[in-house]
Image (tube, rainbow, N blue to C red):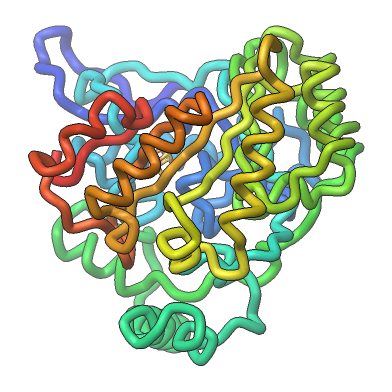
Length: 377
Ligand code: SF4
């Protein structure tokens, strides 16, 4: 699939693109195919694997449109989703002959089921039973105000959008970007679901042998997916050279499943998201989660995985309630004592992001996740 050609060799470099739109796909639990986990709302679906083959989706007009929209802006702003994208970081020539390659990065969200209600997580929006009052109860007044304003904006956008002139989701100008932000309403109905094992088998077969990495998670807790072990067995046997990554909140990891994952080497990386060094700093965001349970599960699985090829990681997302020196250094000390590798990631562009200055948390630099940066950097 060729797009955007005709530049001379003399043209300077300086445009950004993502790898995901060109070499990846993400399959949501309802079957929708989007570019990556960044489009968690499903704003720019390319097709649906319940009714189409991957080949038909990737050769379809929506896929060409996606590539054009990515390349329509030189900075990190992506017109497909109408906002900046943290994955749009690859430098390319501003124009040139660019084609979509084979799939190297495959993301599969097996289920959207999750028993937690993490603040500012998109999954709260999937559950229509969660309203603004829950925001007040779960996150206090500050979160409720932010969440209420967001919900009101979505509501107004839903009402007004049909009255506005139809057109592309977002223009590239400043005005177009502001309009895109204002037009973004509620998530379309039907975002939730659970992929059948048959659908996963077909997606994996159709994705082809070039797949290097499989992320078997999305919005939803993979350990609540009832066919987890069977599905991963299939992924492993169909794509033996691919690196398989699972990310969990750690609350539902249980011995029979973890033992199968380790014994059969069904995953290469198992990431426990535990954002805090103690119950207090953890529970502000991970509503309904328990620090003690998640940590016990991490410790147990890490111990079982010693001397195996499974890498077990502790991921700590830094927010403003868990970003004090004492808490961060406490997590580092705990990780060192337990001999569990830890990486930090700074929440950005969302409610609750840390306000620490980079120079004050420089001591975290060696422990940053590879795609993360200190605040303001
Ligand atoms: S730049 Fe756009 S297409 Fe690429 S990953 Fe980000 S949101 Fe998706």
